[in-house]
Length: 620
Image (cartoon, rainbow, N blue to C red):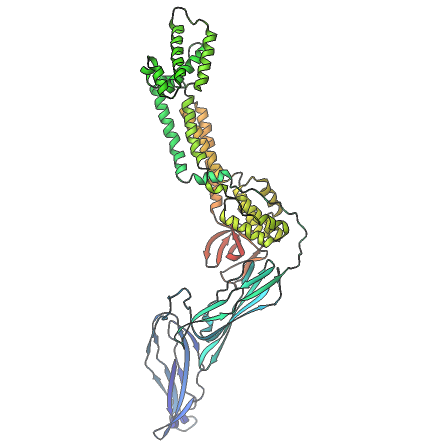
């Protein structure tokens, strides 16, 4: 924006001071004010008289699409009334018109994923890494400099794809603004501190910086060429530590597979089916007194023959529910229709008639021992239980079959990919860690993958990541001896982290299965008409297991992250230049409250609260 004021020479020479040319900054723009005029910028001969030019200017950058109103510019000057030095001055002021400017969107915005985010001209991108020879654990100073014409202060940070195994810490950007041919330009340098955690050759891909070139009228890209960075082995300051053995198992815990496989319809069936089946069974028992397991006992204790006769009658009821067929001449045909062999069915019918004759005939029981032995043999052939036992056994088989059937997950028999254990044995820890991490990502329910990943990272010196991997393994198998022994190698670095990483006696799935077993036992007891104390105990056990499952599930539902590296700062605001409220050691745990781009809002019960980079923590 330029404001120009022309003064005739004879008027300007009479002024005791230079005129004041003022420009107001419009709203909705980023402004770089120019210098106020202290002398004429130019002179011209116009119609035989000289005119002197005073100029004021500003450079503004609109921040949004729409209309921008440029306020009027003003010029003020004072003219002496007479030539006397003490003469008074008459003040004058002139005002220009306001100007409307339409701000249009970029013609290339939104066309591609690589659409420009800024307007500039002639941008160049430079990537510098010092020192040239890197070592594990030693910091590298990385500077990315963007230079050219444009609004330097608002140039965004370039997207750099760091290799895996590099921890990066962004610093404060350095801005240098200068005037280039009447335009604003300069350079903006983004500073990073990068720390490699393993040796090898790491490729740094090309860095692209898209922008809209105002001179060319089209999208353009500033590029920094790709390069390869060699990282050598660093000094090992740590003392030798015991190396944990690897876990060679390849299967997911059957309790985890079973609890997962029952979601959601299996759990619904377990919740609804036992009460319905128990109700149907008791209704059937109430309609047929022979099935009632708690029928009134005889006034006198039954003999062995009497008990066997009652069991025989119960077997007949279970095979032939129809009373007329069971008590008449059609018993043998009914048994054969129920799947009993023909010879056995005929023998059962003859034995029924012999029992009737022995019980009600004139000769009495006769040889009771022989008759009891024959009854026991027939009951053995028919695989009989006491009255009501067959129905309860059927109820147990149906409910337990629903539990066991869900455990046949096809993914449980998948084999591990070979090679990671051999890499661990020969000391190729980086490759072994990548292999174990790939296994854990493919099958996150297998605790052995997480344990082996933690063992590899622990041996490589990445204690924070190892603690996180072992914490995940402990959540999957809290009672595994290898996991419990390994976690003693890396105890929590502070007292506030210990409850966040603690695991209960069992997993939520195991507590849920225990509650399901108690639920089944409770309704089996209801079907069997057990006493009130048995029902109360089974109900208390079921409720306790369900409460423990809910408590453990709630404890694990809140997101937790583990600090990966020692000395990680928890900042008061989500940007790299913010001050650190506290620094935490590797393995410290924090609750994650929310995400904000690359930053995480974290807190803890001991008052630690702030922001950490998502790349500096490992989520559980």
